[in-house]
Image (tube, rainbow, N blue to C red; front, side, top):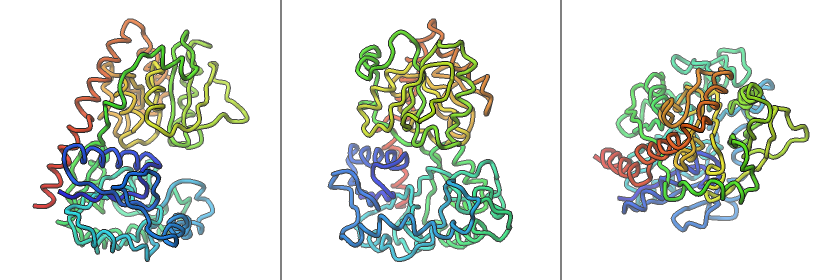
Length: 412
């Protein structure tokens, strides 16, 4: 079976890493996967990027061009919003000309295609939702607005007070397009929360929605000697190490660094040390009452594996989260996780088993969760269950076989 995975990038970003891991899993179970991307970083011959110099140049500018309508909203700030209006990308022509049996869409914004072009794809489609964009009026996370359950407008992400704003027009375009995709498109919610949201939404309620997670290669992300990992990375061996990280970890408010900071300040002074990846050391380092180690961006899985193994607990205080790569990676390395009980976190963290879940945005309970995981009498128990749950729920071959079954259903 030939599967064509479509994503804006092959390696850059959380959705890209998840899509590429599934691509590798499909190859491992004997399928014939290919990947079609707007920006190619790997040297994998099965990944196809823009073919000419002109198309490569256009691929670099299309994300900026697609955001031009958003410029009309000065209160928008830096929050993610994708109108998906930009035509003439040639993507659908390449999809239709391929020999793929099934097309698996992932993150297809950043100017990759015009929304209405989905209707031109002449092959069975599967679409994995890495964020909320597919069923909103253009935002990638709605900041708990919830208007996608009825109709968008007065969009808080745009900073708009007008009902007939850009979010309303994008919503109406999606409504018309999706009505023509019924029976041709299967929607995959990567978490239970994402699948339920899609089913509750005005836009996707009439489409087939299933829940399947991203896979992870547990032969790459695995437990190693923790003291050795700390020493290689130059991290402390005499104090518990708390790990926090994501793309733009400290700058993106959705990642919850403010709540983590409050939680750490409530722990005894100097009792832990914090390691931050995905962010460089700022000019003004916040005083959290504990030493902070800034590791910047890590670009390969081997370094990430070492870092998770160096940590005694990973904290993911995100305000909205689908199926966090950080959580799955940490668990696969045997490192327990503390997070808020929101979004897809409940699919990964079993409270008191492989980590702890705190009530949403309660920093004091987040701190209590950190203390419970760092309780030395339960250290090995937490680590054993972290690895076990990663193997049971997210192991690469096991999850890839579930996707094979889904593709076979789509073909039928």
